[in-house]
Length: 130
Image (tube, rainbow, N blue to C red; front, side, top):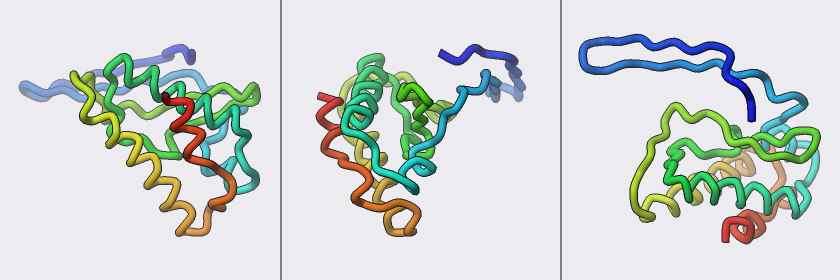
């Protein structure tokens, strides 16, 4: 897990804004960078699903889950980043929305021509999620 390096809290009345700076994850690339050049291996896709499931089991609602926020490092470890729009949320009704958002982000990059549809199998992510 990346270690925190610095943090800042800015208060404004009854609200606040918090920032955290963490160490760089060495040799990590987001899914867009990877999928723009090659297909992801099935075991990596399954790992992505498993990591999302861990996050959901901890009741973390990542409302900005997209392929720019999923990193893979040189050891094929999966990292989910950018938790600034996240919250702990009870229940399960929101979990499918997270997965749907992730799928939409894949499709969006395919439409933009950034990645090829043949470079990923979303069903393998869902398999890992189960």
